[in-house]
Length: 193
Ligand SMILES: *[C@@H]1O[C@H](CO)[C@@H](O)[C@H](O)[C@H]1NC(C)=O
Ligand SMILES: *[C@@H]1O[C@H](CO)[C@@H](O)[C@H](O)[C@H]1NC(C)=O
Image (tube, rainbow, N blue to C red):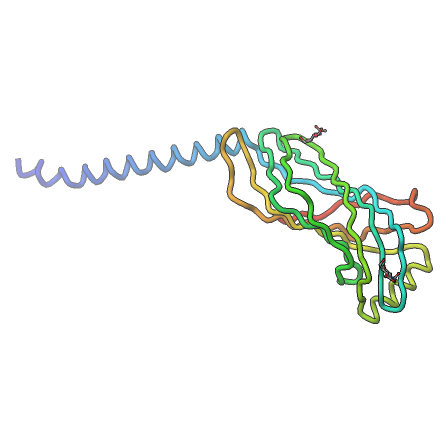
């Protein structure tokens, strides 16, 4: 009798410990199964084309309009994407020279979407050294730009929707051939999610 009343608390504790352990294993298995069915894969971006029109650099003032095609590839077979806010920047020598806000859109799973963008610079004042370097590159016929994108996205798997994530995309260098646009080579971008 005395023996059983003494031994009951430890065995109850052991039972609780076993239940907790089993729960942890079940949760772990559930996460693993979800992970394996969703198989998240990295989003891919590249710049497929950049043309410049109306390029005019007068002292430190720049006018230019860029025709830019960004390819956005969602390789995931289960996860779709809401792009809730998207900003694209064209920069030269670390100075933003043109930007564009893109309309929110929904990207289905396993989908390629081409964003056709037209960021422009109008009467933009450049720093002295930046305008000097840009003028030199322009006269060589080749300008090296960087293209950045920042986007707020949510993932959708079945009916489940994730919280917001910020994607930072950097495409560098993007070489623009002013007088022979056919030479353009597409540029893969780095993605930071
Ligand atoms: C840029 O465009 C504006 C408006 O069209 C014009 O007033 C300005 O002179 C232009 N500047 C240059 C550098 O071409
Ligand atoms: C990608 O999704 C967009 C928007 O739903 C659609 O218009 C386009 O045709 C899709 N592209 C491919 C390659 O499935």
